[in-house]
Amino acid sequence: MTTLVIAEHDNAEIKASTLHALTAARQIGEPVHVLVAGHQASQVAAAAAKLNGVEKILHADAEYLAAGLAENVEPTVTALATAYSHLVFPATAFGKNVAPRVAAKLGVGQISDVTAVVSEDTFERPIYAGNAIATVQSLDSVKVLTVRLAAFPADGNSGGSATVEQVSAAGDKGLSSLVSRELTQLERPELTAAKVIVSGGRGLGSGEQYKAILEPLADKLQAALGASRAAVDAGYVPNDYQVGQTGKIVAPDVYIAVGISGAIQHLAGMKDSKTIIAINKDVEAPIFAVADVGLVGDLFEAVPQLVEKLGA
Ligand code: FAD
Image (cartoon, rainbow, N blue to C red):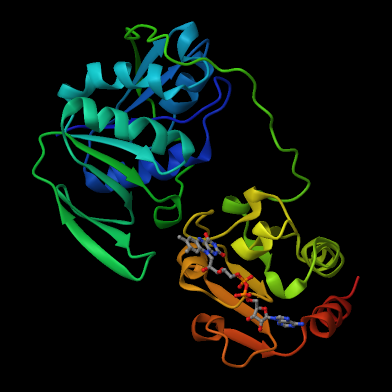
């Protein structure tokens, strides 16, 4: 029984998502191998070789693997799959793009969004927007999993000394090409990696008010900014701020929900946060059912007061 983790990287650095996936893989069982499919990514392979608990790095190099396009990564993964009992992907845009193709080509089921490893063939995953946890057993010979980052801590320790083996890339499918990539320049921590998140909802009333009320608080706390879907749909903030079932899944140390009612689709994305603080003028708002600390009041008064109390 050997597990293969499919590394997410940009040909220069290994992404933190890979470290979370590695933790899940090690809980399934060892040995664990890591596939680095990319172009001129030998420094990624070398960095991966130092990770804790990795026995071997498989390094596939080809120009058409440079962009991590699912159509080209899949055949390389599929060609290696028969040697493995488990293929583990991070449940990120990259993993969620490649894994279903691999599972379909192998004719096996995919177990998505794994949050706990019960045994080598049994896993937990949330269903109904996180309101129930399904325990899923797979009898497939190769188990294809995507794992939730928030459920498995990243192990960035570098005590390992894995061997690096060159493997063939499986050929250019020619089905897709990368036209351009626009990277968001963030002045704040990235939402899924932040320790503190200040998140705003429809209660803020406008994009200007979102900025005026929440940015000073986020600045004080060195927090990332998030939002409900209603705030995104109303154009207060861009799409990538959205937390929830159809947005980002986050589990920071502190999540401050301001003017957010707490619909189940929003809770699905943040209820695993360690401490939840809610500010809402409606005492009946469902957010208070999951909040550790709740303040019933007008956010336009409460948040500036909080900022003032936090001092310089
Ligand atoms: P509202 O529900 O309108 O709540 C606004 C809150 O602000 C209220 O509780 C009100 O009391 C409070 N408020 C107003 N003024 C003030 C004030 N001055 N001071 C203090 N409090 C005030 N939603 C998500 O967030 N993320 C998702 O990923 C998501 N995915 C979805 C997927 C599907 C398939 C569907 C159907 C819905 C999804 N939704 C999602 C939408 C979700 O159902 C809710 O509509 C949304 O979360 C509501 O956002 P909100 O809490 O900002 O707005």
